[in-house]
Amino acid sequence: MQAEFLPDDFYAALLEIVGSTSVRHADDIPESALHDWSTERGGKPCALVTPGDTGAVSAVLRLCHRHNIPVVPQGGLSGLAGGAVPSEGAVLLSLARMDQIEEIDPSSSLMVVGAGCILQRIQDAAQNAGFYFALDLGARGSCQIGGNISTNAGGNRVIRYGMTRDLVLGLEVVLADGTILPMMNRMPKNNAALDLKHLFIGSEGTLGVITRAVIRLHPGICGANTALVALPDFDAAIGLISHAQRMLSSRLTAFELMWNDYYQAVIDETGQKPPLATDYPLYALIDMQGADPEGEKSVFEAMLETAFEEGIISDAAIAQSHREIETFWSLRDGVSEILSRRAPAISFDVSVPLSRIGECVNEIRAALAQTFPELPVIFFGHAGDSNIHLVAGSIAKCDPCDPTGENIERTVYEIIRRYGGSVSAEHGIGLHKKPWLSYSRSETELATLRLLKQSFDPKGILNPGKVLS
Image 1 (cartoon, rainbow, N blue to C red):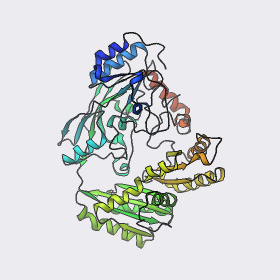
Image 2 (cartoon, rainbow, N blue to C red; image 1 turned 180 degrees about the vertical axis):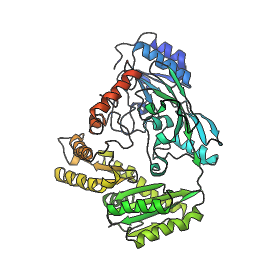
Image 3 (cartoon, rainbow, N blue to C red; image 1 turned 120 degrees about the horizontal axis):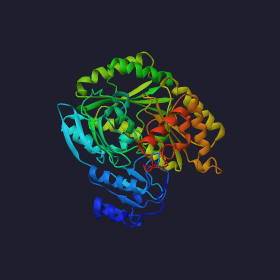
Image 4 (cartoon, one colour; image 1 turned 30 degrees about the vertical axis):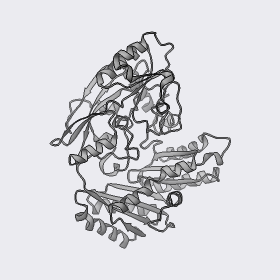
């Protein structure tokens, strides 16, 4: 939806609500607010506003609702699906000033935060209070918790702690017409009718604007036992996940899988000395965090020794210091360097049932090699939670007639659909994956989503054009 005109008093009303220093007119909006980390580009916004509290967010939305002006909520703009890029004629609503850590409640193991609070700041505050906030992802230094919640972010610790949805106790949300929903629940148990917060977690700002949150904390950790292991095939990877969870009593914190093509690429691009030989089919990064890593070391090593004796793993390197742990993790996090060297590239975030990941990867690799023989492709992922990432690039070299890579995406997503998987495991839909949403959601599901959108936002002003057609 676009605003057909801007009333003369519209900007004056915005200034009255948030103050002159918190409003930017169309020609004064910084470039950084016009895109996220995806390749998607939106329309030209009419203004950027940065309210400082929930009352101001409510007033801005009430004003825009009255004048039929679209609103695009923005967090840290670290999304990879184009979910926060501007819509034509929209007011960009930044939550950056709402960055307060309001409270840490040790007895209830929770924290109350503003939606604009940076993830790493939350992690640090939890650690300083003797706790651990389990959400973690590469954009931790710039992403905001409101954006994490609105996209139901995943990250590195899902196998133990779950998605962002599992870390949220309560929310405060402002609806399209300015109505404030105070759902700041602080209890793990609250069955007083339907829990409305789940409608907004993962809705990508299309149903309401998240302004505050009550988030769950876990007992503090002091370190980790970490190993990089080589595997003979994907069946061994499944066996190792089960073996590790059984022997470590479900304390397995991360299980990151790297196929040989990714391992070779990250060694080549970063120039690191490989901890293990580069000729194994698969590599797994295993992490067990805890309050007493030194005391748990023997259990961790016994798990690896047993796996080696049973033929599950082919080789292993155990980190002997925090620096070595960081070195191992830098291999997994080296994808950013690969992406920069292989641009333009397509980065896929998909999921399929764990037991079928191996055959699915083999089928995708074969299909891409047959249709795009010059296209370099690498595979990696969280794997333990059914999530696969693959990077296909540089796409310009493989199909000059398809500069956007649509044919490459169709090849991958057709296979994902046959395996009963998802075209988005953790990055959301936004603009980029909207054409493929029907590959993972049925027509009746999509119809229900549209009904929800119509109910919460009948004028269609919230993040228009994103997620649903």
